[in-house]
Every structure is written in structure tokens, then in C-alpha cells.
Image 1 (cartoon, rainbow, N blue to C red):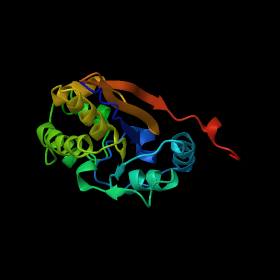
Image 2: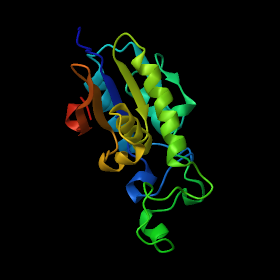
Image 3: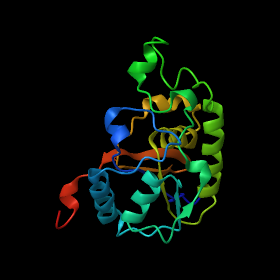
Length: 200
């Protein structure tokens, strides 16, 4: 049996103001901060030497701009299924704030009212996985923390709730792939370092 060498590179978008504040940022189209812009450019330096057969991005500007600044805007296909979780009535609120009404709540333990269920997010993740698994070569995905975490859990064949164990920082790089025939995580939450960006 020939070993599968395919890799799926996952990039969480650069910093936003709401990410710094810990506010749930789903479908609100929040821009990158100045730091987020620099992070995206630095990610481009790290990724530049690697060829990709497929590049996908969420159309939300924080992911799309990270993709563009990293140098993949012209190659990318912008896919609605990569948008972040729709947090409904919890959009823009912090976990601490939500817990004043619903103690011990997390996004993984209770679906947000008026938003998507975890099962719906997992359904979108499975569509993305089927798409990249069919590619002959490596894929690069620019998206959002919770969406990428669910993609990783589903890649491993785990229930979507297992994504709670896979924290992701802004401007992080992760890699999914194979060991023999088994799907694995090769690298996770490798945070961007601006030291790799010349002239900044």
C-alpha cells in the first residue's frame, strides 16, 4: 500500500479587536487589527516555499484579508462553508458575560440560541474535508478558530465536541495529514512570530 503524503494546512486569521477582547465573533465581519495585518504578512513568509494544489478561504474579511496578505488571494476559492460558527444571540458576547445568565456554559456544551448547532457546524466541516481529501496534493485553508477546530476533530474521525480540546490562537498554523493510512495531526497551533517578517 502506498502511504498517503497529503497534508492539509490550516491557518487561523490574524488578530482582530474582538479576538483580543474574547468576544464571540461569528458572522460579524470584523477587520484585522494592525497587528493582525503584520501577522498575516509574516504567515506569507512562512508559507511561501510550499506549493498548494488547492487554497480555500472563508469569505469573511478577517480570513480573506489574511489569505490575501499572505499571498494567496488570487489562488484562493472563497467558500461559505468555511465561515465561522453562527453564534446567534451570543454574537459579540464573552463567555464570562454569557455565564452570568448560564453558569458553566461553553460553546461546546450548549448551542447558541438563534445560531447554529454544533451538528450543523460539523456538517459544514465534513463537506470541506471531503473536498480537500479528493485533491491530489496539499491544501491550504484560511478560516476561523472554532471552524478549524471542528475540521480537525472530524479529520481525526472524532465527534465534533472533541474540538473543545484543540485550542487555536490567532495567526496560528496547523497541519493535518496521515501516518500510514491513519489521519493524524502533524502540527498544531504553531503561533506566528513577527521576527520572520523583514522590514517590520
